[in-house]
Length: 208
Image 1: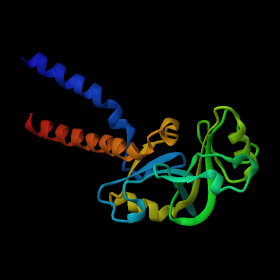
Image 2: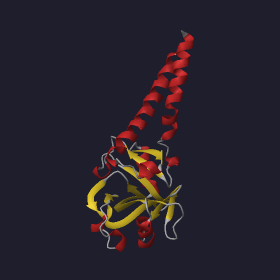
Image 3: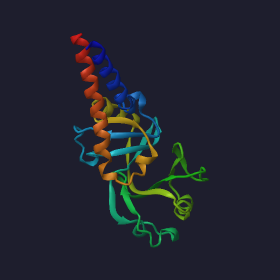
Image 4: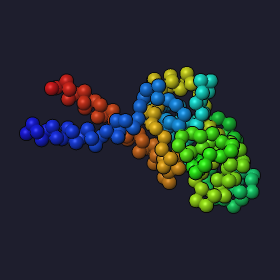
């Protein structure tokens, strides 16, 4: 009986291992190329159920893009550029700051001449030329955002310390997810599963 119980604990630990390392609430893990996942207790309506990709992280300022708020507006109505004509790809609401400003994220095989690497092969595009190239690439993967989220580094650390955000490593599959509306639900479930497992572990240790 004891052996069976030990086996269960090992298997449970192995099954939940990806969850344990998948997210954090430690401010030292805040960095470029990380996801911020809003906690259920976050009261700011601008970020309720938001998943934010940090695309710039400096001591004097942090910029993020909300990746799970797809609009019904096609980019052809937003971008006055030849490559966008007739395009029905929807724009995304990137955040509450500068709502008329446009940024884009693209997954590219080669680094663009103009653009900053966010993580792996995902780049932040702020100018027309690299975005037009991404649009013209067969099977090109990109997202266009109106507005962005902004903090000072100190402000974001405080919000994280008070439990507003969970920090996840970014993943291109989630940045360009086909079902962005369900992204927060999936990530918050991971975060809460991790803490449920941690609480269970504490209780188990105290009872042994």
